[in-house]
Length: 363
Image 1: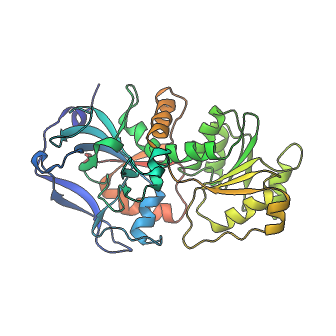
Image 2: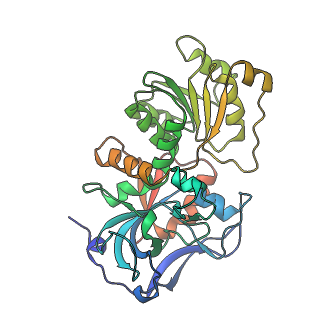
């Protein structure tokens, strides 16, 4: 049964939105205009955002952690789940008013260049990113682009879909980039966080054996519940490289590591503890971090470091289908938009276990 917010497709002239005007914040919730249907350009849609996940990338954008410039002022957010309430005239799309859709990190791309043709849409030089260089989903009515809106499968609640739109598709893609096969062992630094706890579940679907790396009893219990075979608290071991190797049956270390942690040190450790011909997949984005790897042993043991940056439209559809089938359950709490500043503080201090989903229409 759709909620009242989902069934009401009327379009007001004013709305609530969370925005910041300068790098470093503060983030404030304000009343701003709603783009009206006649203002939409071809291939744009107006989405009534019912729920939006909160991602560490949103915090990075607000703090100015990246060597990239975002628009200012900026409405953040890129895990928006909602309903299409208007479509620009002359749009080439099969979307219609009332469809359930998701707003992802990639808001738009050209779909014509080599990167797009090969399925590397996030690497398109003309890509637009929600909540970074175009306003995102921390608003009740968001303009997005029809060709990158993801259909949300029937039976998947909007609040469950929201975190999959970035966190889910990001780790799903990263696991594919690892090159692991069923039966291989994979380490996940940051396993109890928003990305990591989803990575455990997608890894299980792929038949991988998971070593979870994080700290704290709550995160340990969460990782165990989700199917991690082994747990390593990085604050409780003197030599994490040895601990990871000892956690594998042959002592060679895991076949891959999906680094969802925002710690630069986690990357250097991963390059040491993966086994020969292993792969470290870079996902987390610690500010100004660099990876120092011993060239001799990287070559001699044929180790690989690869970057993985979200996914394309097909990978988003696949990640959502797994969730719709009940195979992926995001641990999240629902909070009103007004609590976003507090959520950022918890995220920055590493206190969040799982994910936060904002209810854009909660009082």
